[in-house]
Length: 258
Ligand SMILES: C[S@@+](CC[C@H](N)C(=O)[O-])C[C@H]1O[C@@H](n2cnc3c(N)ncnc32)[C@H](O)[C@@H]1O
View 1 (tube, rainbow, N blue to C red):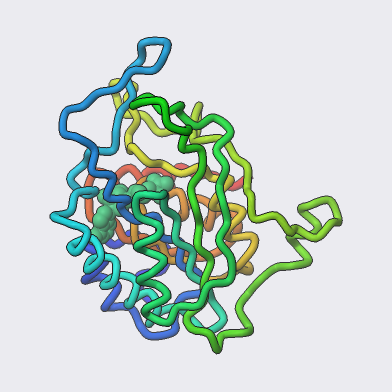
View 2: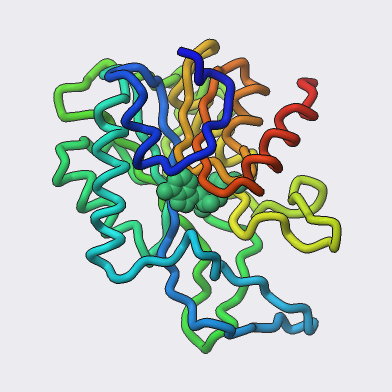
C-alpha cells in the first residue's frame, strides 16, 4: 500500500474509503469531542495563566445529529478496513464517548473493554464547583462479534506488569507536558489536544506486533506515528489541517529511535 508510513492530508471520511477491506491491524482514533465551548470564553488557572480551550473549527458541528452522522461515516469505514484479527480503539470524554459507543454497537462493532485513562494532573473544574473531569475513556473493540482471534499480547502485558496479569482497566498517566508538548514559535501549544506518548504506547503494546499496520484517522501532531515508529510498527495518518500535517511530518522525521 503506497500510504504506509505517510500522512494523508484530507478528510478521513473521504480518505478512509480509498483503503482496502481488512487491511489494517489497529486503528487508534482520537476524534473531535464536540466540546461546544462558549465562543470567546477564557478561563484562568489559580496562578493566573490562561487555559487554552479547544474551540477550533474542527471540533464544531451543527448539532448532535450532525456529529452522529459524521461519527457513523468514519466508524463504518474503520469497521470495513480493520482486519478480523485487528482492533479499534476510540478515545473520548463524557461529551462524546457515549454517542460514539452507541454508534459503534449499532454498527455491530464488538466491545472488548473500556479502559479509563486517569489523568494524574487534570485541570480542576475552573468553570464551577463540579467534580474535576480527570479521565478519558478508551473503547477497545473488534470488527464484529465473531472476531475471536484478535491480537492481545497477554504475556507481554504481564511482563510489563512485573509478572502479574495486567487486569486493571485504569491506566494512570499524566497529561502531555514538558518537552513532549509541542509549542509554536510563541511558546503556545501547537495543538490543543496532543495525547501523551505513554498512553498510545500502552495501546500498541497491548494489541499489535512488530511490523503491524496502525492507522490513525485523526492524526493531529502524529503521536500515533511516533509510537508506531518507536515500536517498529507501520503506520498511516489522516489529518485534514495542513498545519498539523506539517507539524507531524517534522516530528516523525526528527524522531530518532533510542
Ligand atoms: C483530538 S485531535 C487528535 C490529536 C492527536 N491524537 C495528537 O496526539 O496530536 C483531532 C484531530 O483530528 C483532525 N480532524 C478533525 N476532523 C477531521 C476529519 N474529518 N478528517 C481528518 N482529520 C480530522 C483535527 O484537525 C485534529 O488535529
